[in-house]
Amino acid sequence: MPKVTGAYLRERRDNIVRAAMKLFATRGYSGTTMRMIGAEAEVSVGAISNYFPSKDDIIEASSQMVADHYLVADQLSLEPEESVAEYLSRLCVASEHDDDGVDYSRISVVTWGEAMTSDQVRVAMVDVFHEVQIKLREQLVELQRQGRLAADLDVEAASVLIHALANGYMLHAQLLGEGPRTPPADVLRALLQPVTPPVR
Image (tube, rainbow, N blue to C red; front, side, top):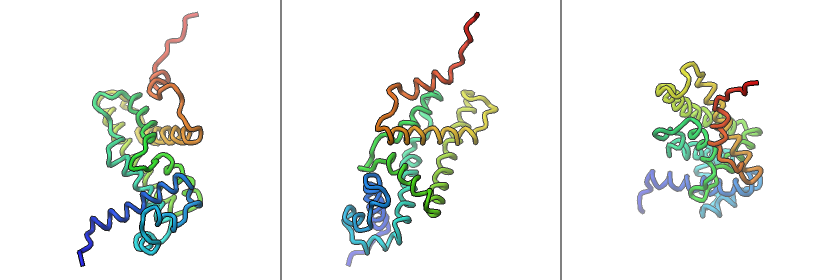
């Protein structure tokens, strides 16, 4: 009998999570059963229970996979010579693209909803939020170091605001089916640009 490797077990586990994420994103959490997840992942319900005792454990794992999608892929890092407005704009639209057949934007919204009623999922989401905000704070500190942000900016508060802005933009697009026609970078540049009051 061939030896089962750790890599195989991780891939099988991730396959179950990705299958569940696709279903959560289209059918919602309560509309998805373990049997449906098994069918999508092409494994038995018993095999799923070897990895995840409950659906809450699966959605908790999915929240970490969403974070990894952004953090490991380095989507939250500054690009060379990227302006502050361009960086914030990119964060707002980063979730608009599917990857591996998973709509990361929709699954984020579903997970937030479940976090309102499940302490287990809420704790996992708080951990994910902290991971993202730490990364955002690092980028803001780098912008301060380069002299492109005010040295007295409270980067902790700013990272929370930016994360909320990106998440709100994501939720807006999911609810209405589209974002505003004007690119976020253009709007942010106009908002952040100092305006000289007209002389009267």
